[in-house]
Image (cartoon, rainbow, N blue to C red):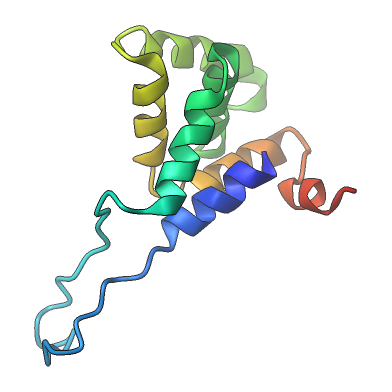
Length: 131
């Protein structure tokens, strides 16, 4: 899980593309620049591949864990969160691809997964340090 959270954090903090020739000032142009995914993001590709490689139960757990961390339920409602996550996937044509797309569309995915683990009393940082 620590790999996934670290990669999600990397994905969340993408840098803005810079154009040294533009002469633009963020204050003058109302700070309209936004982070965009140009399809060539190796972190996004790695994250999506990892998520697609998970089995169905693992993908359901991942969605439910994100929802738990996002505050959409409590640890006591874990079974309900999992049921809702499974139901959400029922509308997908390509389960693995659409699950990855859904999760990567969550701007704070890494934070929510870490908070979900915290609800279980698990620190993802301790998992990184384990031998």
